Length: 459
Image 1 (cartoon, rainbow, N blue to C red):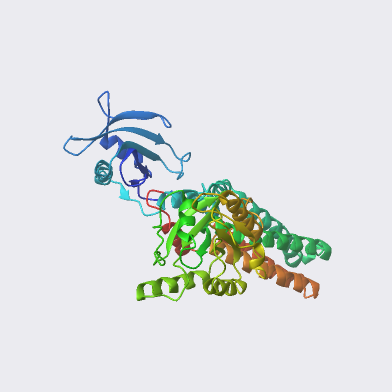
Image 2: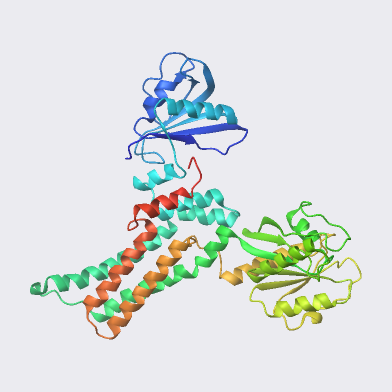
Protein backbone atom coordinates (compact mmCIF):
# COMPACT_ATOMS: atom_id res chain seq x y z
CA UNK A 1 0.00 0.00 0.00
CA UNK A 2 1.13 3.56 -0.67
CA UNK A 3 0.57 6.45 1.72
CA UNK A 4 -1.66 9.13 0.25
CA UNK A 5 -5.20 8.73 -1.01
CA UNK A 6 -5.39 10.05 -4.56
CA UNK A 7 -8.26 11.18 -6.76
CA UNK A 8 -8.66 12.17 -10.39
CA UNK A 9 -11.16 12.31 -13.23
CA UNK A 10 -11.06 8.88 -14.91
CA UNK A 11 -13.10 9.69 -18.03
CA UNK A 12 -12.15 11.85 -21.05
CA UNK A 13 -12.57 15.57 -20.63
CA UNK A 14 -15.54 17.11 -22.37
CA UNK A 15 -19.32 16.82 -22.27
CA UNK A 16 -20.88 13.39 -21.84
CA UNK A 17 -23.65 11.55 -20.08
CA UNK A 18 -21.41 10.26 -17.29
CA UNK A 19 -18.08 11.35 -15.84
CA UNK A 20 -16.24 9.26 -13.26
CA UNK A 21 -14.01 10.45 -10.44
CA UNK A 22 -11.83 7.72 -8.94
CA UNK A 23 -10.27 7.73 -5.47
CA UNK A 24 -7.73 5.16 -4.26
CA UNK A 25 -6.08 4.75 -0.88
CA UNK A 26 -6.77 4.00 2.75
CA UNK A 27 -8.87 7.15 3.20
CA UNK A 28 -10.99 6.72 0.06
CA UNK A 29 -14.08 5.65 2.02
CA UNK A 30 -13.68 8.20 4.87
CA UNK A 31 -13.38 10.98 2.28
CA UNK A 32 -16.49 9.68 0.52
CA UNK A 33 -18.33 9.55 3.85
CA UNK A 34 -17.41 13.19 4.40
CA UNK A 35 -18.62 14.59 1.06
CA UNK A 36 -21.38 12.16 0.01
CA UNK A 37 -24.93 12.33 1.36
CA UNK A 38 -27.34 9.47 0.59
CA UNK A 39 -30.56 10.43 -1.18
CA UNK A 40 -32.58 9.12 1.77
CA UNK A 41 -30.81 11.48 4.15
CA UNK A 42 -28.30 11.02 6.94
CA UNK A 43 -24.63 10.14 6.72
CA UNK A 44 -23.17 7.56 4.41
CA UNK A 45 -21.90 5.36 7.23
CA UNK A 46 -20.66 1.89 6.42
CA UNK A 47 -20.96 0.73 2.82
CA UNK A 48 -21.02 -2.85 1.68
CA UNK A 49 -18.27 -3.26 -0.92
CA UNK A 50 -19.24 -3.78 -4.57
CA UNK A 51 -22.62 -2.11 -4.11
CA UNK A 52 -23.94 1.17 -5.52
CA UNK A 53 -25.40 4.05 -3.52
CA UNK A 54 -27.29 7.04 -4.93
CA UNK A 55 -26.91 10.47 -3.37
CA UNK A 56 -25.39 13.92 -3.55
CA UNK A 57 -21.91 15.35 -3.30
CA UNK A 58 -22.09 18.56 -1.31
CA UNK A 59 -19.75 21.50 -0.91
CA UNK A 60 -18.39 22.51 2.49
CA UNK A 61 -21.29 24.95 2.95
CA UNK A 62 -23.84 22.23 2.18
CA UNK A 63 -24.60 23.30 -1.40
CA UNK A 64 -25.31 20.39 -3.77
CA UNK A 65 -22.57 19.98 -6.36
CA UNK A 66 -24.05 16.97 -8.17
CA UNK A 67 -26.23 13.91 -7.87
CA UNK A 68 -23.97 10.86 -8.18
CA UNK A 69 -23.78 7.09 -7.84
CA UNK A 70 -21.09 5.88 -5.44
CA UNK A 71 -19.30 2.55 -5.93
CA UNK A 72 -16.99 1.15 -3.25
CA UNK A 73 -14.37 -1.57 -3.85
CA UNK A 74 -12.45 -2.82 -0.84
CA UNK A 75 -8.75 -3.75 -0.85
CA UNK A 76 -7.23 -5.94 -2.11
CA UNK A 77 -10.00 -6.75 -4.59
CA UNK A 78 -9.85 -3.56 -6.64
CA UNK A 79 -7.98 -2.28 -9.66
CA UNK A 80 -5.21 -0.71 -7.56
CA UNK A 81 -5.24 -3.29 -4.77
CA UNK A 82 -6.28 -0.49 -2.37
CA UNK A 83 -9.66 0.77 -1.20
CA UNK A 84 -11.26 2.43 -4.23
CA UNK A 85 -14.30 4.69 -4.44
CA UNK A 86 -15.74 5.82 -7.75
CA UNK A 87 -18.23 8.67 -8.08
CA UNK A 88 -20.32 8.50 -11.24
CA UNK A 89 -21.25 12.12 -11.91
CA UNK A 90 -22.92 13.96 -14.75
CA UNK A 91 -20.35 14.30 -17.50
CA UNK A 92 -19.88 18.06 -17.66
CA UNK A 93 -16.45 19.66 -17.43
CA UNK A 94 -17.44 22.18 -14.75
CA UNK A 95 -19.31 19.77 -12.46
CA UNK A 96 -16.52 17.18 -12.61
CA UNK A 97 -13.91 19.78 -11.68
CA UNK A 98 -16.07 20.94 -8.76
CA UNK A 99 -16.56 17.41 -7.41
CA UNK A 100 -12.88 16.63 -7.91
CA UNK A 101 -11.89 19.79 -6.05
CA UNK A 102 -14.21 18.72 -3.23
CA UNK A 103 -12.35 15.41 -2.86
CA UNK A 104 -9.10 17.36 -2.57
CA UNK A 105 -10.58 19.66 0.07
CA UNK A 106 -11.59 16.54 2.02
CA UNK A 107 -8.04 15.14 2.04
CA UNK A 108 -7.31 13.44 -1.26
CA UNK A 109 -4.22 14.32 -3.29
CA UNK A 110 -4.23 14.91 -7.09
CA UNK A 111 -3.28 11.71 -8.92
CA UNK A 112 -0.32 11.89 -11.28
CA UNK A 113 -0.56 10.45 -14.82
CA UNK A 114 -0.78 6.67 -14.61
CA UNK A 115 -0.72 6.64 -10.82
CA UNK A 116 -3.69 4.29 -10.42
CA UNK A 117 -2.06 1.68 -12.65
CA UNK A 118 1.31 2.33 -10.99
CA UNK A 119 -0.28 1.48 -7.65
CA UNK A 120 -1.73 -1.69 -9.17
CA UNK A 121 1.83 -2.61 -10.20
CA UNK A 122 3.40 -1.72 -6.85
CA UNK A 123 0.71 -3.65 -4.99
CA UNK A 124 1.30 -6.78 -7.08
CA UNK A 125 -1.97 -6.64 -9.03
CA UNK A 126 -0.14 -6.36 -12.37
CA UNK A 127 3.40 -6.90 -13.59
CA UNK A 128 4.95 -4.20 -15.75
CA UNK A 129 4.22 -5.87 -19.09
CA UNK A 130 0.54 -6.31 -18.19
CA UNK A 131 0.33 -2.76 -16.83
CA UNK A 132 1.60 -1.36 -20.13
CA UNK A 133 -1.08 -3.40 -21.87
CA UNK A 134 -3.65 -1.20 -20.12
CA UNK A 135 -2.36 1.91 -21.86
CA UNK A 136 -2.03 0.07 -25.15
CA UNK A 137 -5.70 -0.93 -24.99
CA UNK A 138 -6.69 2.68 -24.41
CA UNK A 139 -4.51 3.86 -27.31
CA UNK A 140 -5.34 0.96 -29.67
CA UNK A 141 -5.80 2.17 -33.27
CA UNK A 142 -7.32 -1.01 -34.68
CA UNK A 143 -9.15 -4.18 -33.70
CA UNK A 144 -5.95 -6.20 -33.87
CA UNK A 145 -4.10 -3.70 -31.70
CA UNK A 146 -6.93 -3.89 -29.16
CA UNK A 147 -6.85 -7.70 -29.25
CA UNK A 148 -3.08 -7.76 -28.75
CA UNK A 149 -3.40 -5.31 -25.84
CA UNK A 150 -6.07 -7.47 -24.20
CA UNK A 151 -3.86 -10.54 -24.58
CA UNK A 152 -0.94 -8.62 -23.07
CA UNK A 153 -3.17 -7.55 -20.16
CA UNK A 154 -4.20 -11.16 -19.63
CA UNK A 155 -0.52 -12.15 -19.39
CA UNK A 156 0.40 -13.54 -22.82
CA UNK A 157 3.82 -11.85 -22.91
CA UNK A 158 4.32 -12.15 -19.15
CA UNK A 159 3.72 -15.90 -19.26
CA UNK A 160 6.29 -16.36 -22.04
CA UNK A 161 8.90 -14.37 -20.09
CA UNK A 162 8.08 -16.20 -16.85
CA UNK A 163 8.55 -19.60 -18.50
CA UNK A 164 11.88 -18.53 -19.97
CA UNK A 165 13.09 -17.25 -16.61
CA UNK A 166 11.95 -20.45 -14.87
CA UNK A 167 13.98 -22.57 -17.28
CA UNK A 168 17.03 -20.36 -16.82
CA UNK A 169 16.66 -20.39 -13.04
CA UNK A 170 16.53 -24.19 -13.03
CA UNK A 171 19.76 -24.38 -15.03
CA UNK A 172 21.42 -21.80 -12.78
CA UNK A 173 20.38 -23.67 -9.64
CA UNK A 174 21.83 -26.96 -10.89
CA UNK A 175 25.12 -25.30 -11.84
CA UNK A 176 25.50 -23.33 -8.62
CA UNK A 177 24.57 -26.28 -6.40
CA UNK A 178 27.56 -28.11 -7.81
CA UNK A 179 29.79 -25.06 -7.30
CA UNK A 180 28.65 -24.23 -3.74
CA UNK A 181 28.43 -27.74 -2.31
CA UNK A 182 31.14 -29.87 -3.91
CA UNK A 183 31.55 -31.94 -0.71
CA UNK A 184 28.00 -33.27 -1.12
CA UNK A 185 28.97 -35.05 -4.32
CA UNK A 186 26.24 -33.28 -6.31
CA UNK A 187 26.96 -34.25 -9.90
CA UNK A 188 27.87 -31.44 -12.29
CA UNK A 189 25.05 -30.71 -14.70
CA UNK A 190 25.22 -32.84 -17.75
CA UNK A 191 26.49 -30.83 -20.70
CA UNK A 192 23.67 -32.13 -22.91
CA UNK A 193 21.03 -30.98 -20.40
CA UNK A 194 22.59 -27.52 -20.17
CA UNK A 195 22.79 -27.27 -23.92
CA UNK A 196 19.11 -28.16 -24.14
CA UNK A 197 18.18 -25.48 -21.62
CA UNK A 198 20.24 -22.81 -23.35
CA UNK A 199 18.99 -23.77 -26.81
CA UNK A 200 15.37 -23.65 -25.66
CA UNK A 201 15.85 -20.28 -23.98
CA UNK A 202 17.58 -18.82 -27.03
CA UNK A 203 14.77 -20.04 -29.28
CA UNK A 204 12.16 -18.49 -26.99
CA UNK A 205 13.92 -15.13 -26.86
CA UNK A 206 14.42 -15.02 -30.62
CA UNK A 207 10.78 -15.95 -31.19
CA UNK A 208 9.72 -12.98 -29.08
CA UNK A 209 12.19 -10.72 -30.88
CA UNK A 210 10.71 -11.82 -34.21
CA UNK A 211 7.38 -10.37 -33.07
CA UNK A 212 8.80 -7.02 -31.96
CA UNK A 213 8.26 -5.30 -35.31
CA UNK A 214 4.73 -6.64 -35.54
CA UNK A 215 4.07 -5.26 -32.08
CA UNK A 216 5.42 -1.87 -33.09
CA UNK A 217 3.14 -1.81 -36.12
CA UNK A 218 0.09 -2.56 -34.00
CA UNK A 219 1.05 0.27 -31.66
CA UNK A 220 2.20 2.92 -34.15
CA UNK A 221 0.68 1.86 -37.48
CA UNK A 222 2.35 1.34 -40.87
CA UNK A 223 3.66 4.57 -42.36
CA UNK A 224 1.95 4.55 -45.76
CA UNK A 225 2.80 7.29 -48.25
CA UNK A 226 0.61 8.10 -51.26
CA UNK A 227 2.88 9.45 -53.96
CA UNK A 228 2.65 10.47 -57.62
CA UNK A 229 2.83 13.46 -59.90
CA UNK A 230 0.14 16.18 -59.63
CA UNK A 231 -3.44 15.39 -60.66
CA UNK A 232 -3.16 11.59 -60.74
CA UNK A 233 -5.77 11.25 -57.98
CA UNK A 234 -3.77 10.99 -54.76
CA UNK A 235 -6.14 13.13 -52.72
CA UNK A 236 -9.14 11.36 -54.25
CA UNK A 237 -7.62 8.07 -53.13
CA UNK A 238 -7.11 9.40 -49.60
CA UNK A 239 -10.72 10.54 -49.44
CA UNK A 240 -11.97 7.23 -50.82
CA UNK A 241 -10.03 5.16 -48.28
CA UNK A 242 -11.15 7.41 -45.43
CA UNK A 243 -14.74 7.55 -46.61
CA UNK A 244 -14.81 11.32 -46.14
CA UNK A 245 -13.77 14.47 -47.99
CA UNK A 246 -10.59 15.08 -46.03
CA UNK A 247 -8.44 16.54 -48.81
CA UNK A 248 -9.38 19.21 -51.34
CA UNK A 249 -9.71 17.78 -54.85
CA UNK A 250 -9.52 20.04 -57.92
CA UNK A 251 -8.29 19.85 -61.49
CA UNK A 252 -5.62 22.44 -60.69
CA UNK A 253 -2.15 20.82 -60.48
CA UNK A 254 -0.41 21.38 -57.16
CA UNK A 255 -3.57 21.72 -55.05
CA UNK A 256 -1.99 19.67 -52.25
CA UNK A 257 0.84 21.83 -50.91
CA UNK A 258 1.49 20.05 -47.61
CA UNK A 259 1.34 16.53 -46.24
CA UNK A 260 -2.07 15.42 -44.94
CA UNK A 261 -1.87 12.60 -42.40
CA UNK A 262 -4.78 10.45 -41.26
CA UNK A 263 -5.12 7.09 -39.50
CA UNK A 264 -7.19 4.24 -40.89
CA UNK A 265 -7.57 0.55 -40.13
CA UNK A 266 -7.51 -2.07 -42.88
CA UNK A 267 -8.31 -5.64 -41.86
CA UNK A 268 -7.48 -4.66 -38.29
CA UNK A 269 -4.07 -3.26 -39.25
CA UNK A 270 -3.50 0.41 -38.37
CA UNK A 271 -2.09 2.59 -41.16
CA UNK A 272 -0.71 6.12 -40.93
CA UNK A 273 -1.85 7.35 -44.34
CA UNK A 274 -0.02 10.35 -45.79
CA UNK A 275 -1.26 12.25 -48.85
CA UNK A 276 1.70 14.16 -50.26
CA UNK A 277 2.33 17.01 -52.64
CA UNK A 278 2.70 15.93 -56.27
CA UNK A 279 6.27 15.22 -57.36
CA UNK A 280 7.33 17.71 -60.02
CA UNK A 281 9.53 20.76 -60.51
CA UNK A 282 7.73 23.13 -58.14
CA UNK A 283 6.52 26.44 -59.53
CA UNK A 284 6.63 28.46 -56.29
CA UNK A 285 8.25 28.43 -52.86
CA UNK A 286 5.24 26.97 -51.03
CA UNK A 287 4.86 24.05 -53.44
CA UNK A 288 8.62 23.50 -53.32
CA UNK A 289 8.41 23.01 -49.54
CA UNK A 290 5.58 20.53 -50.06
CA UNK A 291 7.65 18.52 -52.55
CA UNK A 292 10.60 18.52 -50.13
CA UNK A 293 8.38 17.11 -47.41
CA UNK A 294 7.16 14.45 -49.80
CA UNK A 295 10.77 13.42 -50.39
CA UNK A 296 11.42 13.29 -46.63
CA UNK A 297 8.45 11.04 -45.97
CA UNK A 298 9.33 8.76 -48.88
CA UNK A 299 12.75 8.21 -47.35
CA UNK A 300 11.34 6.41 -44.30
CA UNK A 301 8.06 5.08 -45.68
CA UNK A 302 7.19 1.47 -44.89
CA UNK A 303 4.52 1.14 -47.57
CA UNK A 304 4.20 3.26 -50.72
CA UNK A 305 1.04 3.62 -52.77
CA UNK A 306 2.41 4.89 -56.09
CA UNK A 307 -0.43 6.42 -58.11
CA UNK A 308 -0.41 6.84 -61.90
CA UNK A 309 -3.04 8.19 -64.30
CA UNK A 310 -4.12 5.20 -66.38
CA UNK A 311 -5.83 7.44 -68.95
CA UNK A 312 -2.48 8.85 -70.15
CA UNK A 313 0.87 7.40 -71.09
CA UNK A 314 3.72 7.62 -68.59
CA UNK A 315 5.20 11.12 -68.47
CA UNK A 316 8.77 12.15 -67.70
CA UNK A 317 7.67 12.82 -64.10
CA UNK A 318 6.19 9.32 -63.92
CA UNK A 319 9.43 7.84 -65.21
CA UNK A 320 11.40 9.73 -62.56
CA UNK A 321 9.14 8.31 -59.87
CA UNK A 322 9.55 4.79 -61.26
CA UNK A 323 13.33 5.18 -61.14
CA UNK A 324 13.02 6.26 -57.52
CA UNK A 325 10.78 3.31 -56.66
CA UNK A 326 13.32 0.83 -58.07
CA UNK A 327 15.82 1.96 -55.40
CA UNK A 328 13.46 1.93 -52.42
CA UNK A 329 13.37 -0.70 -49.69
CA UNK A 330 9.76 -0.01 -48.74
CA UNK A 331 6.95 -2.26 -49.87
CA UNK A 332 5.27 -0.79 -52.95
CA UNK A 333 1.82 -1.11 -54.50
CA UNK A 334 1.35 0.47 -57.94
CA UNK A 335 -2.08 1.93 -58.59
CA UNK A 336 -3.32 2.81 -62.05
CA UNK A 337 -6.07 5.27 -61.21
CA UNK A 338 -8.97 6.53 -63.36
CA UNK A 339 -9.75 3.11 -64.80
CA UNK A 340 -13.27 4.41 -65.38
CA UNK A 341 -11.73 6.42 -68.24
CA UNK A 342 -10.17 4.80 -71.29
CA UNK A 343 -7.06 3.12 -69.90
CA UNK A 344 -3.80 3.14 -71.85
CA UNK A 345 -1.43 1.84 -69.15
CA UNK A 346 -0.55 -1.86 -68.89
CA UNK A 347 1.18 -4.00 -66.28
CA UNK A 348 4.19 -4.26 -68.58
CA UNK A 349 4.76 -0.51 -68.19
CA UNK A 350 5.99 -1.22 -64.66
CA UNK A 351 8.50 -3.98 -65.37
CA UNK A 352 11.51 -3.97 -63.09
CA UNK A 353 9.59 -3.09 -59.93
CA UNK A 354 8.73 -5.85 -57.49
CA UNK A 355 5.22 -4.64 -56.78
CA UNK A 356 1.63 -5.62 -57.55
CA UNK A 357 -0.15 -3.46 -60.12
CA UNK A 358 -3.82 -2.70 -59.48
CA UNK A 359 -6.37 -0.92 -61.64
CA UNK A 360 -8.61 1.36 -59.55
CA UNK A 361 -10.88 4.35 -59.77
CA UNK A 362 -10.74 6.48 -56.63
CA UNK A 363 -13.60 8.58 -58.01
CA UNK A 364 -15.92 5.65 -58.77
CA UNK A 365 -14.69 3.50 -55.88
CA UNK A 366 -13.82 0.50 -58.03
CA UNK A 367 -10.82 -1.66 -57.18
CA UNK A 368 -10.62 -0.37 -53.60
CA UNK A 369 -11.59 -3.71 -52.03
CA UNK A 370 -8.77 -5.39 -53.94
CA UNK A 371 -6.44 -2.61 -52.76
CA UNK A 372 -7.41 -3.17 -49.11
CA UNK A 373 -6.84 -6.92 -49.48
CA UNK A 374 -3.45 -6.31 -51.08
CA UNK A 375 -2.40 -3.89 -48.34
CA UNK A 376 -3.37 -6.41 -45.65
CA UNK A 377 -1.49 -9.20 -47.41
CA UNK A 378 1.64 -7.09 -47.92
CA UNK A 379 1.77 -6.04 -44.27
CA UNK A 380 1.19 -9.60 -43.09
CA UNK A 381 4.00 -10.79 -45.36
CA UNK A 382 6.19 -7.90 -44.29
CA UNK A 383 5.98 -8.69 -40.59
CA UNK A 384 5.28 -12.42 -40.57
CA UNK A 385 1.81 -12.25 -39.02
CA UNK A 386 0.21 -10.11 -36.37
CA UNK A 387 -1.95 -12.57 -34.48
CA UNK A 388 0.33 -13.53 -31.58
CA UNK A 389 -0.55 -11.80 -28.32
CA UNK A 390 2.97 -12.25 -26.90
CA UNK A 391 4.30 -9.28 -28.84
CA UNK A 392 6.96 -7.05 -27.30
CA UNK A 393 6.26 -3.60 -28.67
CA UNK A 394 8.24 -1.28 -26.42
CA UNK A 395 11.79 -0.22 -27.17
CA UNK A 396 12.87 -1.17 -23.65
CA UNK A 397 11.41 -4.67 -24.10
CA UNK A 398 13.13 -5.18 -27.43
CA UNK A 399 16.41 -3.93 -26.01
CA UNK A 400 16.10 -6.25 -23.01
CA UNK A 401 15.42 -9.24 -25.28
CA UNK A 402 18.42 -8.36 -27.45
CA UNK A 403 20.69 -8.16 -24.38
CA UNK A 404 19.30 -11.44 -23.04
CA UNK A 405 19.93 -13.09 -26.42
CA UNK A 406 23.53 -11.85 -26.36
CA UNK A 407 24.16 -13.37 -22.92
CA UNK A 408 22.57 -16.66 -23.96
CA UNK A 409 24.81 -16.74 -27.04
CA UNK A 410 27.84 -16.17 -24.81
CA UNK A 411 26.67 -18.90 -22.42
CA UNK A 412 26.39 -21.32 -25.35
CA UNK A 413 29.87 -20.37 -26.55
CA UNK A 414 31.39 -20.80 -23.08
CA UNK A 415 29.76 -24.22 -22.75
CA UNK A 416 30.93 -25.32 -26.21
CA UNK A 417 34.50 -24.20 -25.46
CA UNK A 418 34.58 -26.04 -22.14
CA UNK A 419 35.30 -22.90 -20.12
CA UNK A 420 33.52 -24.26 -17.06
CA UNK A 421 29.95 -24.10 -15.84
CA UNK A 422 30.71 -21.16 -13.52
CA UNK A 423 31.29 -18.99 -16.61
CA UNK A 424 28.07 -20.31 -18.12
CA UNK A 425 26.22 -19.46 -14.91
CA UNK A 426 27.32 -15.81 -15.05
CA UNK A 427 25.71 -15.28 -18.45
CA UNK A 428 22.61 -17.26 -17.58
CA UNK A 429 22.15 -15.15 -14.45
CA UNK A 430 22.52 -11.96 -16.51
CA UNK A 431 19.91 -13.15 -19.02
CA UNK A 432 17.57 -14.08 -16.17
CA UNK A 433 17.82 -10.64 -14.57
CA UNK A 434 17.49 -8.78 -17.87
CA UNK A 435 14.30 -10.67 -18.73
CA UNK A 436 13.03 -9.63 -15.31
CA UNK A 437 13.19 -6.01 -16.44
CA UNK A 438 10.30 -6.69 -18.84
CA UNK A 439 8.11 -7.78 -15.91
CA UNK A 440 9.34 -4.95 -13.70
CA UNK A 441 11.09 -7.23 -11.23
CA UNK A 442 14.60 -5.87 -11.74
CA UNK A 443 14.10 -2.23 -12.77
CA UNK A 444 14.89 0.90 -10.78
CA UNK A 445 12.28 3.34 -9.51
CA UNK A 446 13.30 6.07 -11.97
CA UNK A 447 12.38 3.84 -14.90
CA UNK A 448 9.11 2.88 -13.24
CA UNK A 449 8.25 6.55 -12.75
CA UNK A 450 9.13 7.35 -16.37
CA UNK A 451 7.03 4.51 -17.76
CA UNK A 452 3.90 5.43 -15.83
CA UNK A 453 4.32 9.14 -16.51
CA UNK A 454 3.45 8.33 -20.13
CA UNK A 455 0.00 7.08 -19.09
CA UNK A 456 -3.04 9.33 -19.24
CA UNK A 457 -4.31 11.13 -16.14
CA UNK A 458 -7.00 9.14 -14.36
CA UNK A 459 -5.50 5.76 -15.34
